[in-house]
Amino acid sequence: MELTWKFLVMLVFGSVVIQYIIIQSLTSTSFLMCPAPFNSSSAPFTDPNTTRRMHVLILTATRCGSSFLGQLLNQHHNVFYLFEPLHHVQDSLTGENFLRQLTLGANRDLLWSLFQCDLYALERYMRPPPTNHMVANLFNYRISQALCQPPVCEGVKLGEEWSCNGCGQVNLTLAAQACRGKSHVVYKTVRVVVVGDVRSLLEDPRLNIKVIQLVRDPRGIINSRIEAFPGWYKPWYSWKTSGQRPPSLHVTPPFTTTCEELHSSVSTALSRPEWLKGRYMLVRYEDLARNPLQKTKEIYNFVGLTMTPSVERWVSANTKGANKEQNNNVYSTTRDSVANVENWRLKLPFEMVQHVQAECQDMLSIMGYRQVHSAQELKNMNISLVQETTFEPFL
Image 1 (cartoon, rainbow, N blue to C red):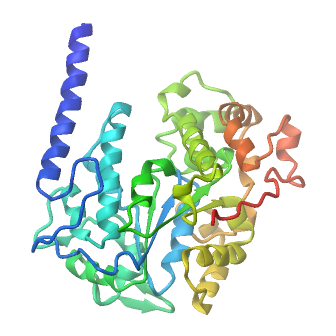
Image 2 (image 1 turned 90 degrees about the vertical axis):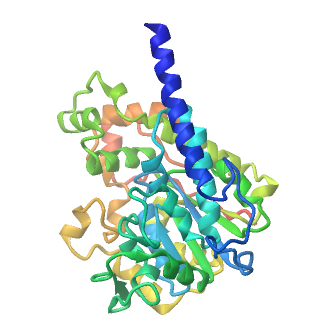
């Protein structure tokens, strides 16, 4: 039985490796490494302006508020933005922890290509393969302002924002043209959390990358995940609604991994390695939510963008919670940001909070989040659990 199990594991691993090698063989991208530029009629994207263009990578974990942060940058007229482009890698290459390095290599390869505005690189992870570079299943492409306006699409401008209504498929050739026409290329991902995993990109002289690391109180993260993904977090959902801890927490996605990865990444950055100098900014979700306009100005300054009146209006309109429906929509980027910062304290049972604190105490400490020691302290909203801490960009 043991030999059979080992054989099956090796068979699965081998099949995924072969799958990735086949995918890579159809392109000129090297296996698990950042590729060198090349000239080919099938890859018309090697751009002499690449090193002058600013590449911005938002690294975070699921339900940390990164959709809102991405939209802050997406609102600028000189930004080309993609929401979760690594989603396609995850769909194409799936597996357990022993496949992490394989997927990580694919993620780095794809990010390198996308920062070069080589959007054809997405095609190797799409099923079915696109025809004539026309893509119908680009993940959440309607979020990107650059993809909803000429030359990519004759979209409709609603006020100050473009709408993709009626745009149909995405022409990747035109999308690449739009990318090359912008001063800043911004990609947001929850598929890579640890900044050390993209060190090779940061050290590549052909790129000009700055990383924005977004973190959040892990107690707020777990509450948001329970609300957004109750099917994935059934035992946690049961615990939250009944107040009784279930015996089957181990069957859910391991939440401790999130805390470990965020702690590892932040610890690396706070040690100020030379390869991160001038390239890393740490942002707490709570600081962004409480002071959205000021924090947006700091972020724009870090990446070299100028705040515009239209961006300021967007920030104001999307942080005041226009209506109750938007505040209650777990996927909305429009809400009363101040009221939402610590409202998890009124929703989670104290025993669950204790459990998360025990699992994530290192992250809580390094990021300046206070622990609670009683149900009364948890519910006392007069005392914030977010300490006043300043994280200056590493310049």
